[in-house]
Image (cartoon, rainbow, N blue to C red; front, side, top):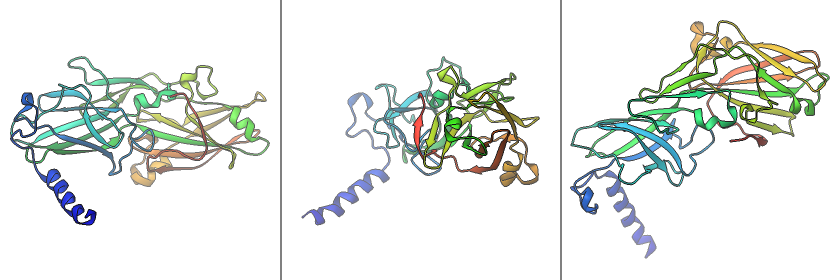
Length: 316
């Protein structure tokens, strides 16, 4: 009996998905005749989010389109299907024409007419608040499925720090690490997904070992390989000079290196490569701390992904 029923059920489900909005059957009286889009969200075709490997239950996005602006939708179960957060705020198709919707993550409550969200990337302990995503998709009454494919609008820099000559793993774990000469404040535009940065540049910002816990980046301790990995999220931007990187060891010595991203960008941009952080790119770099110097190896562009491999220490 079960084997006979399964094709019938499957067929019914397929018809429900393929069909457009009806004339109002099975809808509450107040919404009779209305048709609401069926919103789903993925990143690069995979149901995943920038900050970690999957949507979390309760994650919120802001959707705009037609006469609607910045309506908050959430994924109740973290499965990539989004429904309106506040009943009564639902988005509906107003007629038979196609509507282009835009969406962004994470949702912010914005005053009327405001389209930009400000952020300070010094606060790496709270990466979720500025891990901006943006997408655009269309739908209509006859085909109400609106599938957003989100793109990363920030840049991720993953620094894997390990001990070298004369330095132990415990010293790496306790090191004060800092990065300078980048612009840490900026804005994200929810309308088109663009970003911009303020003019002020960073001087001696510690992302590991900072007395202000809000500034410390997530740290993944890989005790097996003796390595600490720091995923950092920044606003895209260009640089006139290589970025100074400092490491202060427990013994008191301060080491310095300079990081240039031109060679890594050459993988994608060829002769047009610049020393810059490009939106949507993840730069992986191995940093080795020696007693008297720092060596940098294998700066490369990788698909934006969750960083795994050990115990995570971070305040989110």
